[in-house]
Length: 110
Length: 119
Image (cartoon, rainbow over all chains, first blue to last red; front, side, top):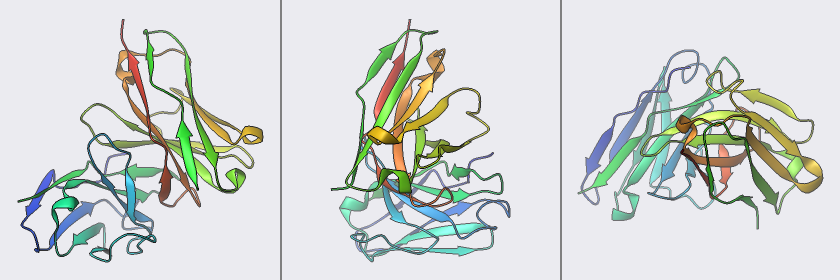
């Protein structure tokens, strides 16, 4: 099972919006609405930010949003803040009844 | 408070066995799946497998099938990840996390258990 493809890094200035892509295949991202996004700070456990493509758990800022088109899912962060600087991972359910993560994207707030 | 508390860091030698744990509290442990995720030093997240403590239904990533064993003891609300013969390449942080279903998102995470395998 190959990892989903994410850009290694993205950056943006405070107040701007950024989008992180997560590309898979019809056997994972494209085949199911079970795409999730996680935020991870160095030395900390991941935190769920988006589930089922576009749903936010209680307590997650509405500056975070998710979407999907075909085999590519996206996480958009609007009104970028310094505290958003972290690593972000996508994950998807697969036809093999397993889950797969993306390689991770390091977000830098300039 | 809903939480998963993992056992402490381990330092082992190659060839040794190990079993790390993940104890759930604040929710119905038998009603949620518990998954295990590996993060090697400086690397990304890898899904290892998942178990439903209610009936011990277990699924493994092909990459980890046969390399580790996932189990659970619902009487003490604890899930386990074990190795019979560790390798240096097993050195990593291991997280447990809970999910409503096996296809879905991990909404609660443990704090992680660092496993170091070195001669």
